[in-house]
Amino acid sequence: MSPLPAWFRRRGRQDPLTPPGAPGPTMKTLAQVEPRVAITNVPYTITQPGSYYLTTNFATAGSGVIIQANRVTVDLMGFSLTGDEDEIGYGVWVSGQPEAPRREVVIRSGSITGFSSGIYFEYVQNGRVEDLAISENVNQGVLLYGAYGGPCSGNSVVGCAMSGNGYYGVYLDGSQSGGRCEANTIVYGPIMTASGVLSTTNGAAGLSPWANFSR
Image (cartoon, rainbow, N blue to C red; front, top):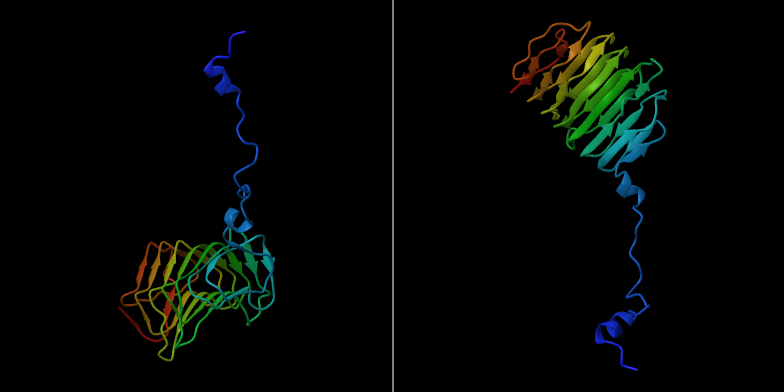
């Protein structure tokens, strides 16, 4: 009997059955699937930078979302925050101090109604409010506050619809600079002129100066 050919002998060999090491992870963590943080109840206080999002419509007494950190984005995901029409409480309250302003906070994409003010930027720099319906709040739709020499600058209100708020669509209280208010529809707001604050393509002017505006 002739010996088996070399190519057959090589094919017949089996590779080692022992794996070279433990298999690596194949499942993604929840943080990898959805790196944002879900807001599942209100009131909700944010103390760390990051991206957050609403999971449903919420109604609350007092404030809805309180932000005490820099570099935060809150996406309402088309859902609503509804207050109890009291003089106390804000839909989204970005809480800064004159000596420690909040920076780079973005609120977007949903509706806010029934609060003292829909959004309250208290000593905030380079913040942004966009694509929101802000209506039927007791006082203002958006309150930008920088009184007593504290900073409130570089903030933008873009692409929002504001109606039926008790006093103003967008209210600037204190010293403001570098602001932008563009492509909004503001109903029942008073007319104003402010130096260095862009206000264009609005259904009606809805900014009210309280103190000083400058570029």
